[in-house]
Every structure is written in C-alpha cells, then in structure tokens.
Amino acid sequence: MECKDVGILAMDMYFPPTCVQQEALEAHDGVSKGKYTIGLGQDCMAFCSEVEDVISMSLTVVKSLLEKYNIDPKLIGRLEVYADGPARPTGGAAAIAMLVGPNAPISFESKYRASHMAHVYDFYKPDLASEYPVVDGKLSQTCYLMALDSCYKQYCAKYKKLVGEQFSISDADYCVFHSPYNKLVQKSFARLYFNDFMRNRSSVDNAAKEKLQPFVNLTSEESYQSRDLEKGSQQLAKHLYDIKVQPSTLLPKQIGNMYTASLYAALASVIYSKHASLSGQRILMFSYGSGLTSTMFSFRLNEGKHSFSLAKIASVLDVTAKLESRHETSPEKFIETLKLMEHRYGAKDFETNKDTSLLPPGTFYLTKVDSMYRRFYEKKAADGIVDSNKCSNGIANGH
Image (cartoon, rainbow, N blue to C red; front, side, top):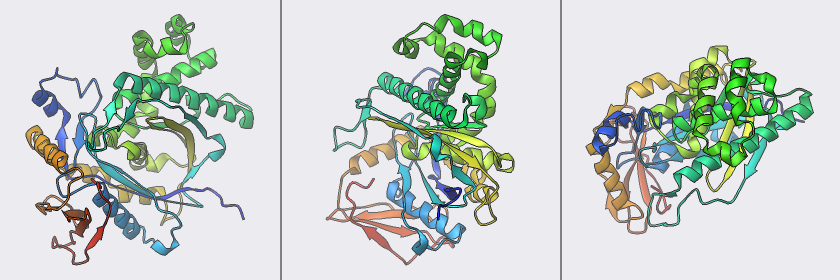
C-alpha cells in the first residue's frame, strides 16, 4: 500500500547555551563596523564549550525528540541527525533531529525534486589534522548560485510538465535556503527573482523590467560576477524577500552556519513563527553541500494530528525561550575556547573540566577521551545532578 503525505512528523533542535555577538567580534577583530553584521548579515554565533561537541549535541537532540513526542525507538527504521561545530566568523553549532514518516504535517512534493552536482574545490578539508577547511570564498559563492540556477531550472521544468503551468516564486509561500550566512540567502532569493524574469518577462512589473533589461544579454558567468545585477535584483526582490524568506532567517542569523543542519534550522524558523497559518501552503527548499551537490524540493503543509502537528512542532522547538536563555560571552572567551578545541582536535587521554553550569537539564556532555580515543559522555539530570547512566563510544576525532 502506498504511503500518503510522507514527510516530517516531528522535529527538535538543540544549540549550545554559549554565544558571541557578531558586533562584538567586529570590534575585537579590528575589522570595519558592519563587516559581519551587514556584510555577512549575521547577528550572533553559537559555539560549543569544551564539554560539548557534535556527538553530545546529537545525543541531546535525539533523546529530547523521542521524549517530547513519546516515540518508541524500536519503531524507527532509520536514524539521521544533522549537526556541526565551530568556525568563524560564519561558524555556528547546532543539531537537528527529525522523524520522517507517512501522514506528516510537513509532506514532501517529491515529484518536483531537482538536483545538481559538480566536481569543484570550493570548500574542502585536505588537512585531516586540522578541524578547519580550506575555503575559496568567491568560488564557493559562485558555485552555490550556479547550483541554485540549475536546480531551479529543473524544478520549474518538472512543474510545467506535470502541472501545465509556469512555476515562479509566487507559487511558493516561503523559500528556505541552506544558510552559510544571511547575505548569501538574500542574494539567492534575488537570483530566483532574476531567473523568473529571464524565463517569463511578465512575471515582474514594468519598473522591474526596465531595471533588469540591461542584464538580459549577460552570459551566466558574467551575471554571477555583476555587482550591479546583484544589487539591483536584491532591491527589486526585497518586498517579496520580507514575506517569503525573512521568517526563515531567525535561527541562522542568531546561531550562525550549522552546515547540514542550517537548511532545517531555517525551516524550523518558519514552522515556529508561522505555524498557525501554514496549512495548505508550499515551502520551497534549497540544500547545498560544497564539493558540490545540491537539491531543490518542496513541502506541502497541513495542520496534522495532535501528536504530530505543526502546533506541536512549534511548541517543542520553543525557539524564543531557547534563544533568550543563552549566555552571551566575550570575544576573548570565545577565542580562548577555540584555541583549546584546536589543541584537543584529534587528541587523546584528556579530561574536560566537566562544567555543566550553563547546560540545560537533559543535556549530554563530554567528560573525557581515553588513551584509545574512546569518548565518554554523561547527561545532566533534571535536578542538575549528573545522571548515573553513562555512555561512551569509540569514535575518534569526534569533535
């Protein structure tokens, strides 16, 4: 029997309680005012203390998801968790857990899915002794926009073939993007606006036609490098951006680049802030991974049932309370933490300071890595006392 409305039944998210303001980082780093906050479009950045890593965050969010939705782990056929850790100034740290199944309030429109892949060295890790990647920033941005163009073109073609009508951004109630930094999200939506114009001039008003007309004869490569096109299309698309994209930017702007988790953190932002009005609406999604591979797909939303509903997901996400409970640290403390993490990357035979004072109850944390690289974790209990149920695994270089 074919399953109906397969998609996201449940969702939860965890991010560290420690963060640093991007404006404070600008002053500390001696860069021009607005370089991170305006140039990158970021407000704040979450980061792990020495007792947290991608494994502890994953343990925390999965345990929370199972408990808050009363899910029997034995009924889960496959488990995937998206999490990532530090970098700067576009770094961040968070983990997302989702339960996928039939009769979901956030269901896939799989018939419209489109993917694009290419072999490029835009963002990669040739030095396995370092936790940081090698990044070609300009190339990476161009690759992102090229992948976006390709996926959108294919998506629109499939939509026209199946529905018999032209697709444009007006057919999506919200557009959600992989979010390395917010400025790229702004550029990406403007790119879709320009794509609609190039494919169907009547998709924009006469004033927009006049402003975009000088760019119609640009080659694809020229269009990616044109600052005038970039600036002009963003200005023209801003009124739509504020409606269709801005609601998705809450968590990415406050947490930073979560890599794999960033797309779904953006989705979580929409669900949390707009859940009461989402039934019957479409959310267009664009995922991207350097190297590169990318996919565009969409969701159709319905209210769902009580245990697996949009209202339940929004309640569990509890975004405002989680953000407001964070502890803001100084850039100096942030840098000090990063240096400790760099020193311990790939290391063995050490213990952490086990300071859980800032961690919320139920959070897993790293206690030590033994001489065989085995990592040991404990859980902070509801009363603030360490849970006696200890866990460990043998994953090396887990941070």
